[in-house]
Every structure is written in structure tokens, then in C-alpha cells.
Amino acid sequence: APLITSSDTICAGDTIWLTTPAVSSAIYNWSGPNGFTSSQQNNFITPADTTDSGMYSLYLTGVNCTSASSNVNIVVLEPIVPMVSWSDTVCEGATVSPYILNADSNLTYIWNGPQNFNATGSQITIGPATTNMAGNYSVIVGNACASGSSIFNLVVLPALGAINASVNSPL
Image (cartoon, rainbow, N blue to C red; front, side):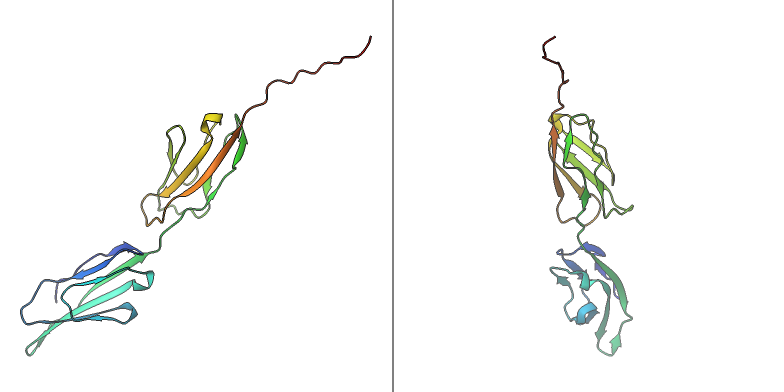
């Protein structure tokens, strides 16, 4: 059976590559999902789509000879955009706990924000908030196909000073 070298798991939009060593006078017979067929030694499918996931097979034919088939399973992952739930406006001193609505325990979430803020996890804590913490925060998926980050703006309202009440009435 021929040796197949491939990109086993990739992100949608990337390139699937399927290669095999050259064999003199051989005819390459590739097949795979979506009606994929090729007689080329090496193949590149770009841009890959999730519908390109599946089993790819190769056998060689030559003069009076056919090899056994080799197979490789290719997985094309859909990009993940984390969806964030958060409070966008808080008062100074409050704590904000944004979290990922579509969290997956197999993934890593990386958060960044003003004042060199960084954290990991599907739920984080920001605070107690100060006005210096106001600004754009972002979260990306660290170990998966990411199609960018989710960004949210945090507004921190200054704390109100003490309120002094007095009565100004005649005695």
C-alpha cells in the first residue's frame, strides 16, 4: 500500500495536502469526499471546507499490478467565534464576570484588555473595577480554529462621592 502524508486536521479555509512518494510508471488513483478524484501524485485542496472532511484513499496501478489501498481521514474544523456575555457598564468598585456562552471544556480561552489585563478560562473576573480598567476587552480561542476575537467595551462609571444633606430652614 502506498504511503500517504497529509494534513490530518486543519481549519476551514486552509489547504488540505495529500502527498505520496513517486513510483516509476505508476498511475495514482485518489478518491475522497465530494466526488474528489485525482491521478496526480500530490494534491492540494484549497480552500478547504468542512464538507471536505472524510476518508481519502489512494491506490497505485502499473503494468499488470495494482497496490492495496491506503486511507487517511481528514478533518476540516469550522472556525470558532466565542460568544461573550458581560455587563458593559458598571460602577467603580463593581466586579464584572464575563463568560463564554458557547464554551467548550476542551478549548482554551485567552482574554486581554486595558492595563495589561490578561486571563484564561471560559469565565473570568475583572475588578473591583476602576476607571482605568475601562476600554476594549477581547477573547480568542487558543487551541482551535479561530476566526478572530470577540471584542466588548467596558464602561466604568466613577463612584459618587459622599452625599451631605442639610436642612436650611428657619429655627
